[in-house]
Image 1 (cartoon, rainbow, N blue to C red):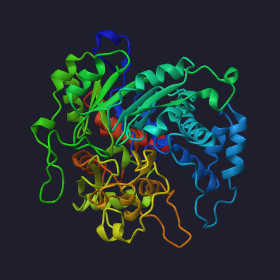
Image 2 (cartoon, rainbow, N blue to C red):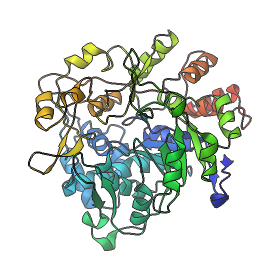
Image 3 (cartoon, rainbow, N blue to C red):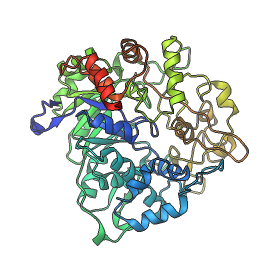
Amino acid sequence: MTTSPSSSQATTTWPVIIQGGMGVGISSWGLASKVAQTGNLGVVSGTALDAVLVRRLQDGDPSGHARRALEHFPFPEITEKIMRKYYLPEGRKGEPYAALPMLGLKRPKFGNELAVAGNFVEVWLAKHGHDGVVGINFLEKIQLATPAAAYGAMLAGIDYVLMGAGIPRDIPSLLTDLAEGRPGGVMVDINGGEPVRLEFDPASIVDRERLPVVRRPKFLAIISAHVMATYLAREEATRPDGFVIEGHTAGGHNAPPRGKMQLDDSGQPIYGDRDLPNIPAIAKVGLPFWLAGGYGDPEKVREALDAGAAGVQVGTLFALSKDSGMRPYLRNRLLEEMRAGRLHVRTDAAASPTGFPFKVAEVPGTMAIPEVYAARPRLCDLGYLRELYVNEKGRVDLRCPAEPIDDYVRKGGAIENTVGSKCVCNALMTDVGMGQERREGYKESPMVTLGSDLAGPKRLDAELGQTGWTAEQAIAWMLRDVEGSSLDGARQASVGASA
């Protein structure tokens, strides 16, 4: 552990390593728990946790973990409703997963109940049984989900909230309002119209007198430029407790290049010197910060600390670890491709319906392969990345460039936005073994996002004899120049954990 140089928070001890909040369920509660128990910040992905919960239940919840967490959910009548609708003791037996209420400006009450319960379950499981700190990572682009999801995480005692893929100016006030028992909200962007405020009132799902006291977690804004740090820090209402400064080599969604988008011959965005974060300028803001994107090795951790950072955020090392939520066959395939020198991670400017560049690992059998992408029937039935827009009748509606092309164009969308746009929602659910199986026989294919800098995973894998690694091993290796850890210590930690 290290102490931030921030004068305003000089008594706070900050984690050196923040484990990235990746995908849907890749940063699972199990991974976050393992990281938190090392004294670093374990992070669960906060994306689609309502779908994760109901699909676990429909698969029979064989481990019993989801039901165990729901037993501690403070609103038993909501638990009963969820169990009655979704729990299948013997699993689905080949039937498709049942749908759940999709996001919208006026989501049904049951949809909010599922969001609160899903986030509670994941965070409760991540925090249970130890006293380490746990965070949750939300995407700013999924604004419609954030207020209810944040409350569910706070009910379970979340310690940190992290958010990127946009400008998270509303989150500090949202967390403060919810912690003080008030309705909390965010401003929601509408294409072709003015932003509107979306609020969640905890009293909308249970009587106010029954609401437990929740505490406000710390908030870390994930950004890529010092100008954004300055903007967010200048007012109390938007000021985070710290920043994660993410370079364009990081996995998942990336900030677009500054200036006009330009693509290279392979169709990838061109990043230049203007896109490199100005670390001294960020340090002058006076809040603790962590560096991300290519910082997953011992030398880079040391470099970040020497530059004044509190530490680093690392994703790919943990995504490929034995503790992540990724399906083992998929992780093993990635490692095989990496060891053979065939693993390439592409910055795809079109893949994500959000319009943000998105890192995609080009692995056979996944949606990164044109033939696999072309074979998928276009549909949007999860809808987390849909955008709000004003339709021809002046009403607010939702659309997604990955839905059927005729539907998207009919809704006023530009046809060029559909080219290469992939159903990220369904693909990422498949990565963790919760892919939809259609009645007509089609099964969703996975799509993996990783950082493009694979030097750290390759080094660690080689030093461990190409046997894979645990989260504890990855941390011990990254911190060996900081806390006196060694690779032998990493091996011993792994043996002790599995004994």
